[in-house]
Image (cartoon, rainbow, N blue to C red; front, side, top):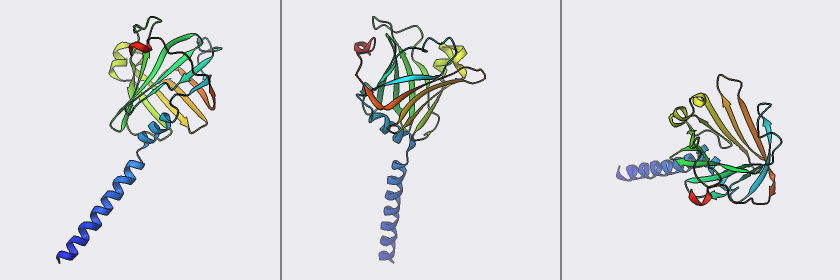
Length: 194
């Protein structure tokens, strides 16, 4: 009887460990995170896919630079022409990812409108994460209360950053070609202070 019990215990432990390994391999947000870290220290040019007709991003050189990666934070400066004020900051929080927009002035000081964004509400997909506006965003920019941002990564092909303001026609999308690296740009504004 004891031998049978030990056999069952070993079988249960093996099954449990196997399930844990499989679950960790299937963590979608972790797979997404790992895809992003593969881009670290690299820069890519982009183009506007969709934006309002009078949007200031149209006709500008767009560069994203995956400049800083550690276990829990990835910082991606996003340059629009000579404007180096924007950095996308992604932070891992358990099996979720928080997206924040860090906006700076040339002297490195924070813009009045900064640190808006949101937390993914589930693990998402390995190639796509969605970030509905959080309460901080709603308080800071009431009109952005219904914002949903999403980032899509096609391994070695493209990276898109997108915004939809639910209930309005506002939709913005930029796409970066991951097949062609560009020269690493200078540091974004305020980099030494954040």
